[in-house]
Figure (cartoon, each protein chain N blue to C red):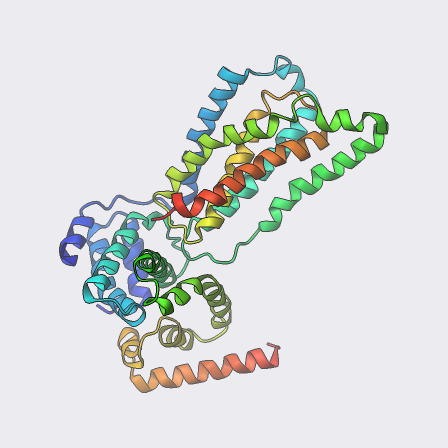
Length: 213
Length: 179
């Protein structure tokens, strides 16, 4: 096609773009994916029976704050990587903050527990499936983010894929909190984080293929 | 109309506001800029160059939501253009394993180069606007002095003097380490 014709064709479709379009688009993708993940938790895994009670205690909110703040930090990365011209990532240290805080909580928790119970506390009841469930629940959110990226312009595809996977994993873990009855900080630090890292690795692996434009 | 940063950015912002005429004007102004960009870097046929230009225009149009109104427009456009070029080389490389060696090296040098560019942008920020703009045009965007003069609407000797003074100030800044 002739370039002039192309330009006239493109110029027929010029909808206004709101100022915070990148954030909005990412939020929509995450929200749609998140709804699907939440539905999967409710319908397939089931809400933990004592959720109401748990929400009044600190443990639930410890887990939830960890995964949610990690998710926000990951979204900060995704927003930057969604633009073509942002080469140096800022605020990456935000990712370390939740991990550090939970690590400190985990150490104090260990100090208060007799060493004989450490292993049981670390493995909980669900260590074998927890990372895989987080990874599975991350998939709808990752797909939502892929949709968001279709109007955005990532140029570092592996990094963008990894950040999207990280965000998807962390949001998935946040949703998973309404099912998972585990209570210890070191359980969350290990197995939740492992699931989130699996999602990030998958994102890094698939990014160059799926995000190409 | 001259295709310099201020003009292009204004048109882009108007286009983002829904002004179709501004958007069309922007795309038309970008055509010669992109042709020059690709001709200088990709030694493909004119058809290849035109394909790259069109692909870039489609990307600029389809992904315009990724432009941040607070940032430089040309940096955004050239980042897209570079991405399209790298992508193009990746595709071509599969078919021509030996011929495109320089291009492959160029493509793989992409990330450090853009990172270096960011450092350069920070340094350029300390210079007077005209010097920074002329250094950017001649040394980063690869325009010739004549092209830079035309784009900036100033004389060629003015371009040379600006670049020379700007570079001298940068050298002094880097060697001195102080401010």
